[in-house]
Structure formats: structure tokens, C-alpha cells
Length: 228
Ligand SMILES: [Zn+2]
Ligand SMILES: [Zn+2]
Image (tube, helix red, strand yellow):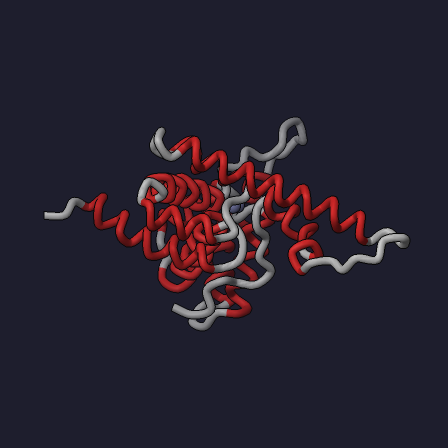
């Protein structure tokens, strides 16, 4: 009988392989998908759930970044509506109002962690662990090498969770990606000078964008999941 872990690893391989075919860091993508899925699930079927209400009121709703993502999901996805958000936030607004009674301004509100930040952290842990484990497989490694590779924060999170035999080659691969990027950033500046008449490659033209996500992580303006 296959253990749950092996089954989970098989599924993770499918999703990570898919993410590696897309642009940018695959862990960023998997985390973002987990965030969108959570928002959709909560708004679709859990707006009456007492535990969710409790979490939403202890954190006074979502953090700024996740609140913006929730707005986009509501605006673009079917089956989730503004009334779901209204229902969830009703409790949080009531709690904020109650806290104001007797407020003397000596200390600010004690705010619990944004529930979606917690979901994102768990997804990052889980996906980093899976990817580290999968990279021990030669075929998977080859697919990883062909992909855009990791962002700096996720390089560290995968590296620290991967089996020891994976670590040296993972570091070497990341070094190669960074030195390639450095070269392209320099070429972009050099070839943009008025006295240099050499064409830029598409990779050099895009290098400044790559630097932004490579060091800081991916930023997606639109929801990644269009429908369930
Ligand atoms: Zn990333
Ligand atoms: Zn958050």
C-alpha cells in the first residue's frame, strides 16, 4: 500500500512540474495558487463558519496584500460574491468597534496574524519540502534546469529543506542563474549607451524585470486561477 506521503509527493510532482513550465519561480506560483484557492473556498462555502469568523475577527480581517488579492478574486471569479465578504467582515468590524469602547490610545490594537499569511507560510513550507525531495530525481532535476528556477527567498527555503545530496547542485545552479543575470544586467546598461551600436537580446531587454522577481519574488497582477 502506498503511504499518504508518497501519494502526496506524486501529486506535488504533477503540480510543480506544471508550475515549472510557466514563467518565473514555481514556489511563488504554487503559494499564490494556494492563496487564491483558500479565498475562493472561504468565500464560497465558509462565510458562516464560526471558526473562520473567529480568525477573521482576531486579525481584524486580512492584511493589505491579501485583502487586495481577495478583492481581485471576488471581481474575477464566478460563484463568489461581495455579500460573502460583507458577511465575513461584519464580525471583524464589530470587533474593531467594540475595541474602540474605552480606548485611551496608550497601546494599539492587538492584532492576530492574517489567516491568509498563515496559509501562505504553510504552502511555502510544504511546496519547498516537496520540491527539494523531488529534485533528487534525475528527470525532475532536468525539468528544473530547463525552468526559470527559483527566486532568492525560495532558493533558501528549498535549499534548507532539501536532502543533503541535492544541496550542492542546487546552489551551483542558482549561482549560475545569478551570474547569468548579472551579465545581462551589465549588457543592458552597456548596449543602451549612445556610443554602442549592438543589438540587445530579448533576455537582456527583460533582465531588469528578471532582477525584480529573482531577488524579491514573483508579483502577479491578475488571479492565476480562472475557474475551478
Ligand atoms: Zn519564489
Ligand atoms: Zn496576509
